[in-house]
Length: 270
Image 1 (cartoon, rainbow, N blue to C red):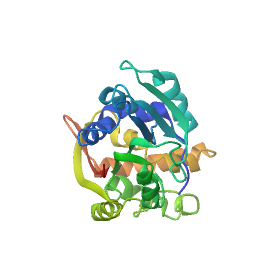
Image 2 (cartoon, rainbow, N blue to C red):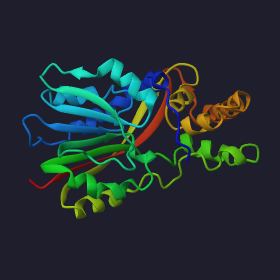
Image 3 (cartoon, rainbow, N blue to C red):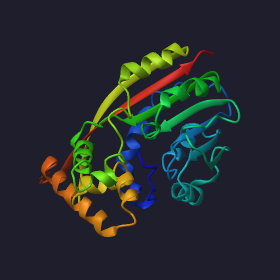
Image 4 (cartoon, rainbow, N blue to C red):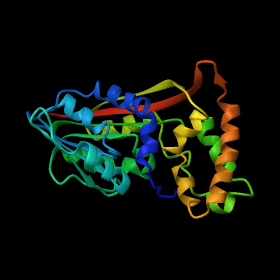
């Protein structure tokens, strides 16, 4: 899978829809052990949902981590600094494949990131170990790799025209595990664990809104791989757009994008 380049402006075009799962995740996180919690947001992107952590825990010192310079630049400019409750919000570069907390955390949270991290379940033990007693590890990931949104992209990339450049670029079907796998892995690490799935039915508007959505996320590896050949990039996007139009027909009120997500909240014993 290609490490994609990210476009914060494109990603934020659907910020409201993308933020809702994070607010649903936060609602299930229990009280944190510290009065001034130390919180790590792993895969913070442009920081627009990291600020929700400061609203929930206004005295916390929160660090958002990401490996995209473009996303971090946006987060630094828009959100870094002291928070209204006396806490602090800052951002730093990190790769989730190797990141380890530099100090004990009350909360490690990750929003729509771990599906980009091969072998992410192997990182859980180290992250749980870095939690303070009574701390929490919580994450949500898209759980729709079998949906037309992704299946059509992979099928197109595997055709003779595109196979040599794109067949090994996109996320594979094993990028997210079943809920039972996450429950078992976290429970065996001694955590009280809550795992669930939710399917959101996003009503999108505008021209080719599903394509516009995926340009900010799942299509990024293909766009990155074809960045040096704009003509080929545009041709692939056009073919993919036509497939999406059939799979996600528009209605008078907009275009419905069903989107399943998987959530996990693991609380370490106090």
